[in-house]
Image 1: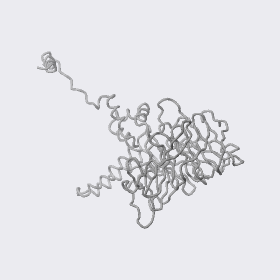
Image 2: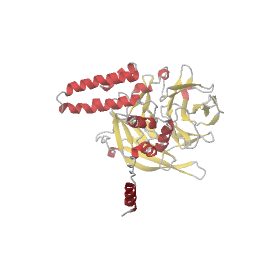
Image 3: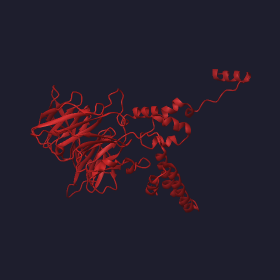
Image 4: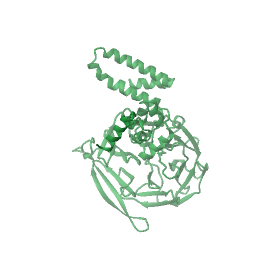
Length: 439
């Protein structure tokens, strides 16, 4: 007889009943570890919160939200912002039930008086320039917060670039879940004499701009819509010909150096070794360049490291035999390393490491895209519970029409119930718009 059998027999003889072992889902600590490993998609936690009151209390706890972000580290790509018809609009790229309606990220006053592509999107924030008021407008789509920062006198708004970043410096901080943390802006512009490039850093903590930083400029800083790229702790801007401007966020230094040979469709990226790299798209090929640096850290030479045949990537169209397809890069996501490329006549989101792509439907124009990544873990999950219910009831339920004699009546009843449910949650016309969009 084993020790466990002997213990059980002794308890029975003594008239003591053994308690059944607790279910793993009844152990809060174990359940917490399980839920932390849910994918970081917007619908994951709302769906978990709909299971029961206990689960809802756990996943809506702010401490859990912080742990959830820290576990996944990199936020998911929710969609992108772009300037369309002088308006800043959001387009989602996720599949149901993770789609976020554009109205959810309506930036309101941000949409006024925008006449150019000068804006940045990073760490859950979007920054644009209000040319009428000569101000930077910093928006946090998740919370709806807005801040205005005045342009400095030396800034020529027609030749300016700006980058927005989270200013949190605490150890273990996760960008993309820091919607209420301080931020900083880095502005880059030409001096009045056009022979220097100037930079300043704004801190929302002090509410002031830092000292002016300058470097010789062998070019004119015309703005072509190409956004900056954050690699490590430095920002990089592409400039005319083959020049690259680097702003070091640690020592606030500004340097200019040469990039690889000029090609169409080039984009600054983070190479596999963590250093700066260049990807050049000329469909059906993508060339990956990286630099060999000397001992002082100054770029010495650029070398072609790898060439990817784009038509071998899943879902991308094959090359045409008679002519090259019109193509160009229209966006790059630093967090997910996804590229947005236009290959006539469609736009694709491409993952080079996974050799996969996804065609983005319903895009009636091609523009410069600013990818928006963020953890979406609001305290009130009613909206996403509604979307999930709609996905189940209005997408999966129609399949039952072929199996149920009264399916049409049942389907109509469910739609009516969903409308009443949505109205009880929202209490305004937002529910009606959501209902109409879904059915």
